[in-house]
Image (cartoon, rainbow, N blue to C red; front, side, top):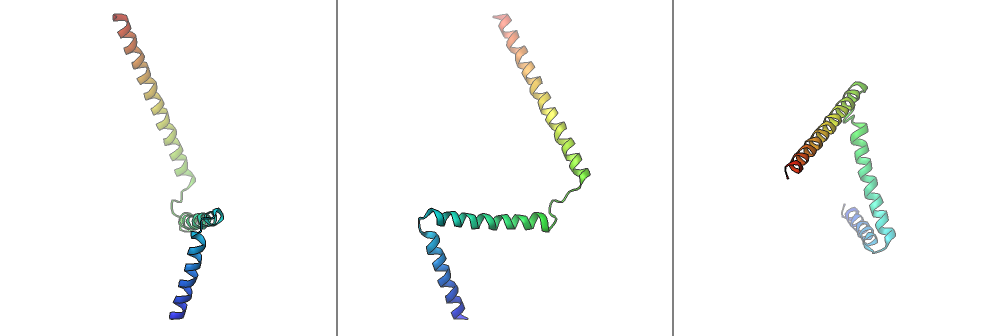
Length: 95
């Protein structure tokens, strides 16, 4: 058992010393390994476990709600712009 642990520790030291060198290729390999690990974790979460699975009707409802909220925001912006123009026009007439 101790031999396996010592072999693992020695291989870990080798990998750590290789990644710890200030070579750009080592850092690129490290970042690529981290990115692939994160990608695989999210791939498992979102595809294999059916997390956030949706059907066509709920997607259609979501798109409809997004369009309605965007139209409401545009209407509020236009209304506030017109109010600002009216206020600035009324102040210039007095002065």
